[in-house]
Length: 246
Image 1 (cartoon, rainbow, N blue to C red):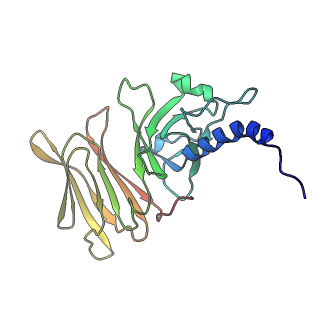
Image 2 (cartoon, rainbow, N blue to C red; image 1 turned 90 degrees about the vertical axis):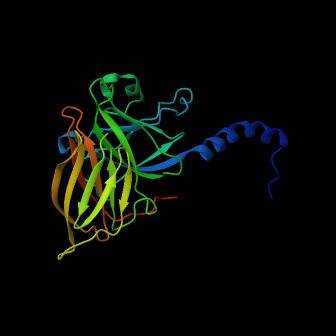
Image 3 (tube, one colour; image 1 turned 90 degrees about the horizontal axis):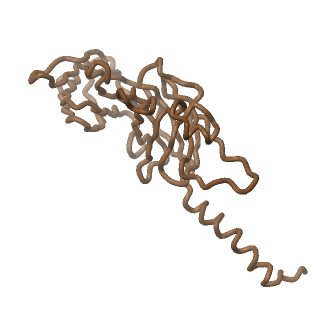
């Protein structure tokens, strides 16, 4: 049987392992799906970086960003990103140097505490913004966004009203609601009308048919276009919820 190593050797190894253990304990693994608000804003070459990652060891290359394409649709595919904090910076290049290049900056986001699986919705930036997008973080866990629901976000500065069949849903500016049991007509679908309160009157901004999500989900976003000021309603069909990896 081999004898135990001398205590002096263990003492020398301890400073090496303790920082690594502390780093692992504070890391967060996030599963991300990036979604373009408009189809023409989809980008294949997009990379997620951890801006608070420690510098590399001597003679080691800096950690490269993780490729996270900005798609015009939602499906089951995601990118796993390991973070030392909660902030994410998106750029058009995998090299860490892109964090300092304004022309390569796509946007920044902060994951709320406890969120380990999210949709990052890339909204058009306002005039004068440094980044190309403003990022909306959507918790897509089963708890926050269950199957069979519409997740409606009013990102405009105007009150909005959505009527499904004969039921009215009111949304204050900045309010988010889950519509969990929408009224339906024949064919398991809902007639929809949307209105924004502008110039002291309710103005219709959209109408159509919302099929019931069934086992899937739907992201609905009300957003004031920065160039026109008009409130737009966008819908994105999503797949059934899943639990992120431990």
